[in-house]
Image (cartoon, rainbow, N blue to C red; front, side, top):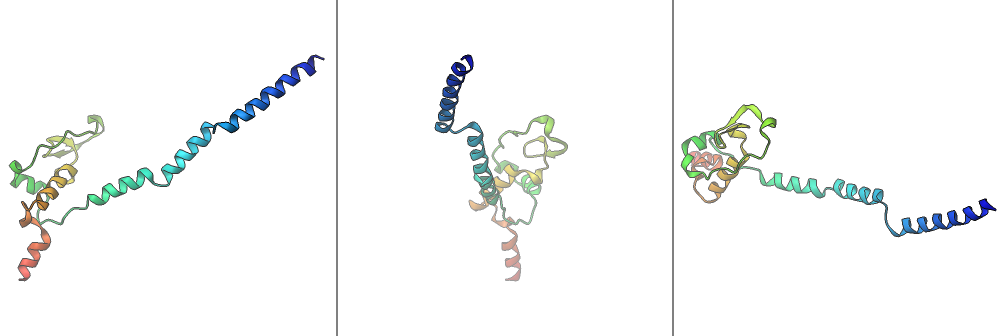
Length: 136
C-alpha cells in the first residue's frame, strides 16, 4: 500500500517535469545554438572585414621614416590597450613612446598615414605614383 501511494505522486512529478522541460529549451541547447552561430562566422567575419580595411598603400618610405620626417603632422595616438606585462619589451614604438611593438608595426600610425594620404598630404610618398613619374 505504501508503494502504491508513493508511486502515484512520483509519476505525476515526472510527468510535470517532462512538460516543463518541453516548454523551455534546456541551457545545453541554448549554448549549442550560440556556439553554432559563433562558428558560422558572426564574430570572425567581423574581424575579417576589419582586417580588409587594414590594407595599406605601398609607400616609398617606412612608417618609422615618415614619422621621423613629419612628427608634427600626426595627432597623438590613443593609449596602448595591451597590458604592460604582456607587451614585448624588446620592441619600442616611437609613435606611442612605449614598448610592445615597433614603429613600423604600429597600426595607429599606419592608419593615420592612410588618412593623410586620402587627404592629399603625403602623396609624394606613394610608390606607384613615383614609379609612373619616372617612366614619363
